[in-house]
Length: 540
Image 1 (cartoon, rainbow, N blue to C red):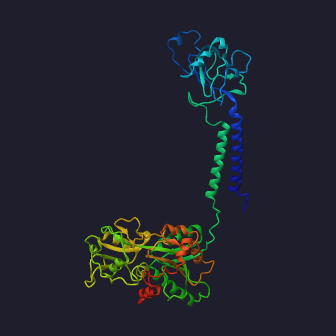
Image 2: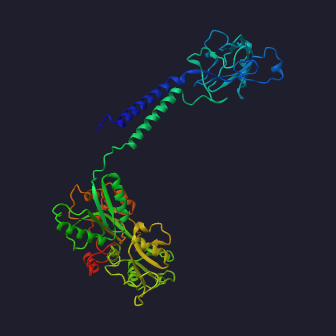
Image 3: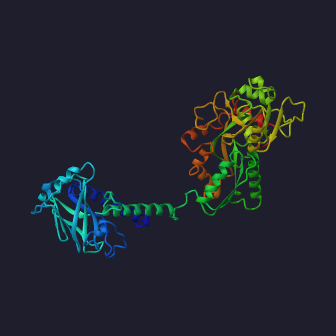
């Protein structure tokens, strides 16, 4: 580990500044706020005569023009306030003179004075008397010992002659356990800043340190790649239902692992398994097969058949599927016997199941679909669907078939047809049908299709998603790295798409059930044999 890295250095400096700020705040809390303080500021310094240097041009009428010696007159508004944390009493003024404070207007002569106090503080005027020390001479104004509670103030409007606008104005005097200091304000009656200059500077420094540290962490380009990273090319085949997961995993893997090139070409579970096996055997005969395997990986909804002994499996997730029904049929739940009657062609109109007077339209996948194969094994009890009777899902071409049934090539095509054809029912991967208009998902035997409750739920339409390679891939191969990524870093991607990862505690228990117990109501060996009879492969 590089202890002298930029982010570590900034982090240490930020921690030191934070500690210093804490100590400083404690010191300030214990020492500074307890000091008594009189603050002052000039809120107005303007010319009222026509011969005042730097005062600017002006026009005068009335007394300003008629009174003698007003040609160089100026007005100064001086605000005096208690801006400390404690009240200041008349006894807190420590000077020996009768008055408490002295204001000096350098270069100008005091000619007149008016004192004002805010509404509610009229009692302060009792202290502004000659007997209390209020007087002026030359450029000096003597101010009485006025007691001020915290935040109280008064104002002195002073008429001056003989000097320029902007001359020095100073206020002095002794305060026991305190001081008299100038302060600043950007508005006429504004209050002193919430933070002192040192506090403002410290806040800016801490903010800059934190922002710099965050920028280094977020923008650094030397983050090590995931341990699953490998380079090369890989083609992912198989399940169309799992294709969205494969595509997002491939995209993220390529972002995290420069030098990798992954292509997803999903045309169905069985076609992917078959292509993988064919390519593996050809790869071996080409003279390359002594080492490694073809750069292919196939996802399959459910286990492969026994005709592919060279393929090695990895259980990736449990996929959940759902029956989808056109919204014109308001049914929300079907029993397994009702579903089997539908797909045998025994139910021709939805009113036979308590629905509206609409003909049943079965929108299915091709005979090699893994989604369809799972339906037949897990829901239909190992039975086949009735044969197809329509090419467009709208008109029945074979009058010998009691219901309209069509076969489509992909899950997206099935969802589109079910959403626009009244009375249509189909099936799809769980998330593919979520939130779409024109159709809704069906519960089975009162169980909702959900990946979150699979371990406790009796929902039957589900299957393990397998990843197959031709033999065990080398540990440094892209296929091995991609599989490790899917079962590690990519778990959130699998969850996002509505699947239950096998590499989680719950997923491990469900995936450990083997082939999920076969079909609903039939042993696996019987249901598998029934479904695969006459067929060597399947796709999804």
